[in-house]
Image 1 (tube, helix red, strand yellow):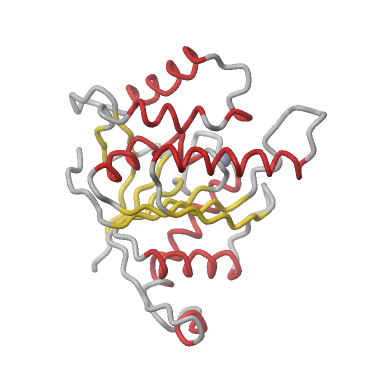
Image 2 (cartoon, rainbow, N blue to C red):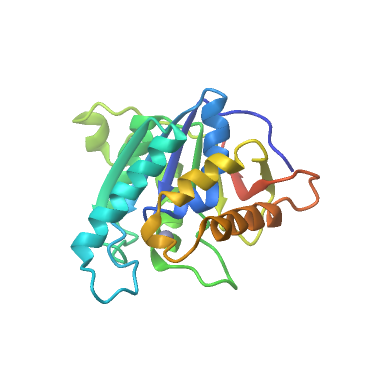
Length: 236
Ligand SMILES: [Zn+2]
């Protein structure tokens, strides 16, 4: 089912620097082109994502956060927030939930994009699973009701916020297809910024990877390139 409406405000919650660009940069570029305001929240520093024995976690984090900043700039994303948690250390706890509630209440999104928490048969990094679950709980009910993390409302002046929908990327049960035929090149530029994660790929291999995934997502929609999500809608 393609969705045609452009949200005005979008929050993207990505576990590591790179996930969002691999899964939803085409959608982000399309919506920005149609006038949306987008905030990226990057939960961890990505400091474990290498097989190179000669690079330290601290150095890798710096490289990856810079890569994310370059990708965001190329897409025209207006706001980038780095939470700097250690890669692999996210927990489904009040501390992380409160951070995401703060981001939701500040950004006031119509739509939140984040990883599918409930993959069954495909392997999924624990940070992906936990980011999806905690984002879902932060959107509903925590950001909606002022007495959850009351101090955000009382001390920081952040009003409760109702998000209309979450779109989960990396899902096994896609029900929402977004046409990225016009923005697949923009997605490729964002993916290319993550040099440490595409080590060894040449330009043609990057293009093949991005376009292949974007073809897999089209389902029977008749589109050329797409991104696929599972949608959860909320009453607003
Ligand atoms: Zn990741």
